[in-house]
Length: 225
Image (cartoon, rainbow, N blue to C red; front, side):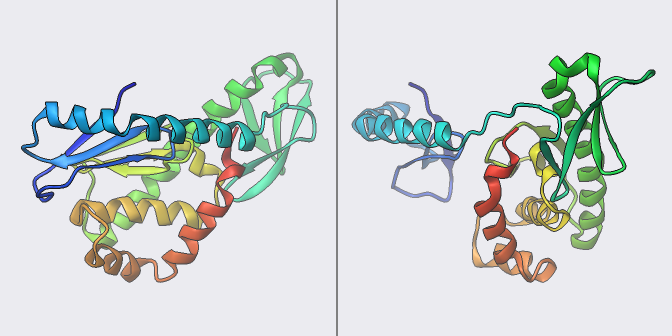
């Protein structure tokens, strides 16, 4: 079993362990803590870790809806559900959103899941860049890059080098939720933790960020493909 180690110069003495929404084990430690001491701390927690990982897998299996990719099945885009239709025709493959319907050629039914992921990724990359550019100018905070990920529950992150990662699954959420996550990560360029300064900065741009945060938590099951 492995863990991800995050060292911090601000952390003085204590070690902490958590399991994130993706099921990754994370240990946070003071910058100069010996690796041997960290490994010992991890071994002491191994029973607890195994229990929590088992609970995480059970929860994931319970909430993970397996898509059938059938005619009439709804797929989300910017907060709205559009039915999938398989049609005959010439000159197209992949998925298209036309007149309120997702369209896939009948001959490519078996490729439906791959087509959706490709379409979502492409659309997300374009829209997220546009929204990040807008809010970067507003905040005067500019990321070193924007990466599109496949995170199931971890929708955004900001690295120590100010590179932002955003899950393509967010493209299924309403625009105001997408904006919330993007602004959240942009604010981390200036404030690396969730201090009161961070939340004050968030509130200056998105006054109702608490409601948007709650909506994302309550509706994340909608974005499982």
